[in-house]
Length: 297
Figure 1 (cartoon, rainbow, N blue to C red):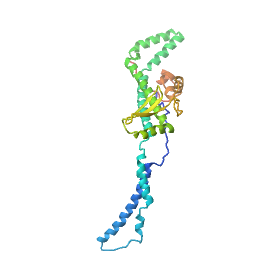
Figure 2 (cartoon, rainbow, N blue to C red):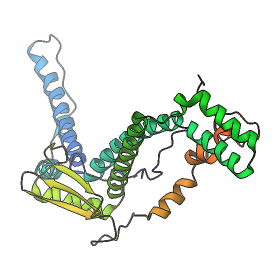
Figure 3 (cartoon, rainbow, N blue to C red):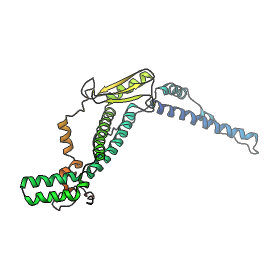
Figure 4 (cartoon, rainbow, N blue to C red):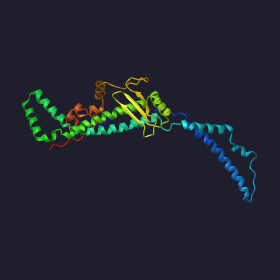
């Protein structure tokens, strides 16, 4: 069973570069530095007259090329005044980064889930043999099933550890998949991200502040950031409530239909059957190389 990221949903947000307060300050200060640098070179050449044996005269008016204009000074001073409005780490970047972190945690849980499902895939084999023995009412198949179970009972058993790993990995996939989808949805919605950004600006907060609490409540559908310094936060609903019209909630039937139409599912043991999953049958339509079959004792 190959691991596939659940969220094609990894909304890769493309944000076009916009002029910023930092860009303005870079441009304005660089312009002044260039003038000052030219002036220093000019004066340095003149200063050499104190030491040189050869004398020289610069072109008339050359020093004017190092002048600082009022417009250049105004641009620099304005940029200085505006730099406090610069946002180094935006709401979009914050939610994208947190969403990507949740995807990584989700994929780790998927790896764990995949491993335990492969370990427990003999349940599929037993089920297939039992169903066939029942439906055909074939005595030989029934006895073969008895012999197979008797010879491999220890390996075929599902342990408490298997159950705990399986259930826990499902919980972790659910939690991190929901968080990832929630955060990446906000990052991909200009109005929602802008609303959260405005909340940070109004609170005088930065998203790099570790004391700010990001939370997604799946039951209420609310993604919120709590600003510790002011004791309140900003939130966006993802279930159709609120003023942003965002609704990314699916029903259980829709989720199962979505999952059932994926390569991850179609290459798994329940969809392919045990023999095809482990490459024991030639009558299979493989989408990927089969995993290694577990050894029987």
